[in-house]
Length: 125
Image (cartoon, rainbow, N blue to C red; front, top):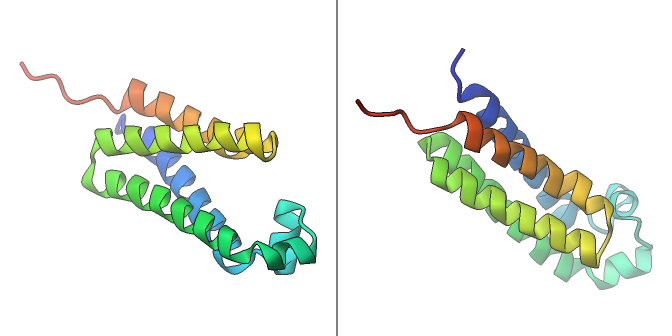
């Protein structure tokens, strides 16, 4: 089995999660699914919709960077964007909701660890 398959699957799952977050924040923020996902009142969601769309766009950039790293086979891109996800997840957990650590940062930490261990450049002899 290709040693890069497992870390690439982990990176892809983190990227897909961020596409899902983009959809929730940009398009479903003040809809029933968004209200439930973020535990919001309708009034707050309506008032903060533009801010949420901005957050969603940033999550889309994180996903795009991860997908770019996957498609190019670029370990540096994968590591950089996973680190960005981790920082965003830790910050979100500290400032918004502790569960963000487990839903956003922890999967990225696992993926980053797998990339570091298994997605190593080939050794030249």
